Image (cartoon, rainbow, N blue to C red; front, side, top):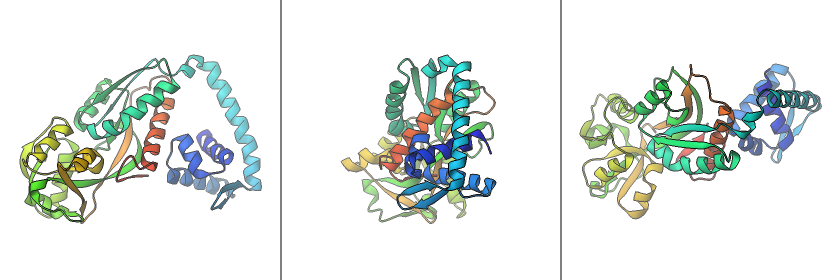
Length: 308
């Protein structure tokens, strides 16, 4: 049993509701529920009665709440004594994200952090996955929100959500229907990033399951905006999350449908350098990032995404 487990328990006990507690903590409801269940298993006792209206402490839960409250007060006092300036947050932070994620997330993150830490100096960077990994390795950025790469052994990873991928095509392609079979990706001209970018590697892996190769019409290592322009001009098709093409779908410039057979999704995670010391107050800042991501998914503003 760790202090973090007790703080999670205390948050649920105070709120009386797993959903509210998950938003306050910045952890998905399913992950929070698993942590509470693990704590109950470790202590070999039930801590909450669960109902459709929320949760209520058991007798054991009431006893644990007393100790958890004392530990919370002790930890808060220690933190204040040792790092009083950290209440003001970090003096500066550099965050990066891939273009689709940046478009959805950076505005709400910037607003939330500025409200929480008025004196903070923020810098946002946008780049493809391979570039972001290089920035993390060199210390050019403090943390990033990315589609989780296959090789992430050098990264500290906190997976927040899973986002489904869609097949995106020009209008000239013809009606797409209710889904586009993954097997057919090898039969159409594609506009994708070059190696070793994640979307290219993933797409090749998908068609490889059917003993096919991609027909690369053009490689685009520029922004997603350029990729969408090329597709709209009938230079080929591409694979993107639905969130990346919302404006083009509304304006009738592009069309999209989910990849099926199988459904294809990517994990979105907050990452930082595993072997680099965190900046002061980094945990608090990334908690705010988690909260914003959770709220965007639960409000439906991050389409085709589910919390994990």
